[in-house]
Image 1 (spheres, rainbow, N blue to C red):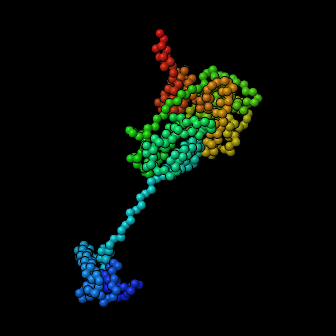
Image 2: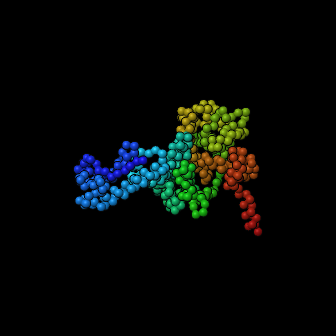
Image 3: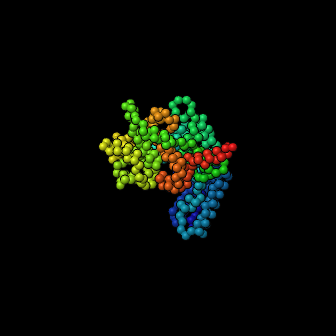
Length: 424
C-alpha cells in the first residue's frame, strides 16, 4: 500500500524558496505533488508535528491546506487499493492534481455562401456547361452586390431574401445599356432559384439544416414561375421569311434565316442541336438525333423545305461533319466547354440577325432562335395535334410537360367562349 507525507524540498529553487508539498511512495518509487507553496527556510517546517512553525506569517492556513491535501491523497490511496489491483505513486498524484481548465473549443465558423457557390461554378465549368456557368455566375455577382462575399447561410433568412427581392426589382437590368429598365418577374425568380440551388447543395453537404431553410412552406419564400406570353410567327410570316431574297448587303443574314427555318421544320428543334447538326444524322430519308438537353433520342422525316436548305451546304465541306458553318472555327467538338461557349455566342448573333430580318420583313415580332419552337407549338395547337404525338416530337419525358407547354398557345376555346358570350 502506498504511503504519503508532507515534505519540503532539500534544495532552494531559483527564488531561494523551498517548495513544500506531498510525497507519495509506492514500492519504493516516489511521486510528488507540489502546488506552488514554498518556505523561505526549511527551519520553518516542523517535520515531527507535520506542521508549519508559528514563525511563518500564514502558518495555520498553510498547515491546514497541506493536511487537507494529505487527507485527500490518503483517501485516494484507499480507493486505488479497493478498486485496482496495481497502481503507482504517480497514478495517485495524477488523480489528485487539479485538472487544467479546458478552454472551450472555438465555435465553428458558419459556412460561407460563396464557398459553396464557387464549388458549384467550378463544377459547371468542369462539366462544360458554359451557358449555365455564365448565367449563374452573373446572378451570383448580383447577389454579392447586395450581400457581400462574406455572407453566411444563417444570415440568408426569409426577411433577408425579401429585401434582396426588393433590391432586384428596383435595380437596373444589366443587359440593357440604356435607361433604368427594372428586372422582369421571371428574371427575379431566376436569381432566387440560384440562391435556392446553393442552399440545397449546402443542405446535402450537411453544412446547414432544415431549421434555417428559407424556401417553401408557410411564411417562407415560395418561388413561382409566372407565365409569359409566348408568341410565334404564324404561317404567312414563316412563308415570308422562307421566300425572302436577300440583297447583296444582307447576304450575311442568309445562314441565320436558314438555321431558324430548320429549327421550325424539325418540330421546334433547339438551336444548340441545330448548330450541331451533322451530315451523318441523315439516314434513309430520315433525320436522327439525340436531344442535347435531356439525352432523348428520336427521328423525324425530312421536310422538302429542309432538304432544299441543307442542299445548299453539301458542297461547302464544313469542319467536323457539320451542316451549318457557325462552328467551323472550333478545333474540335470534344471540348464541351469551348463548344458551349461558341454556341452561346453564335446564338446571340443569330438572334441579332433575326431581329434585322424581322425589320426587313416589317414584322413586329421577336424571332429569336427559341421562337422557332414557339412558332411550331403555335401551329401545332391550331392544327389540334394530339399532345401524345407532340410529346414524342418534343422529346418530353412527361405528357404533363407537353400539355403545360402547349397551354401557352391554346386560345381557340377561350376565343369561342368569348364570342359566344358577346354575340347577342
